[in-house]
Image (cartoon, rainbow, N blue to C red):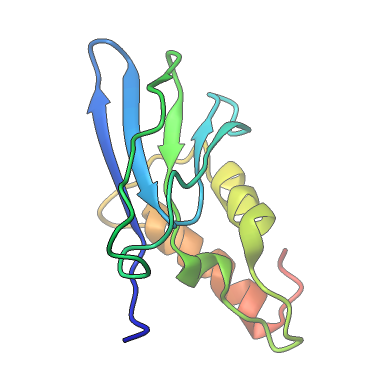
Length: 131
């Protein structure tokens, strides 16, 4: 009793440039414009799984993606990472890390996008002034 999980399930149609999704209490995803700015939040469409066994889950209306858009999906572990001063990493810092690295191609030998995001979180959580 008392256990739950969030879920974000998406179906991307690359030919039609559309994204259909359902989110059971998961933190909002974001459709990012080619300049890295969030143009649309993909908000939850229902409550987390396990809270109410009678709840039915529905999809959000399909989202039309523009050429150059990206979809950013985050976990609460990134958004709620704590710094020594007890501030949270948060959405704005996560978006800032993405924008700082927007033009950098991920490679196998140096800073992939996930490792750059982890570095941004580490800066926040270590109390460094690198943000």
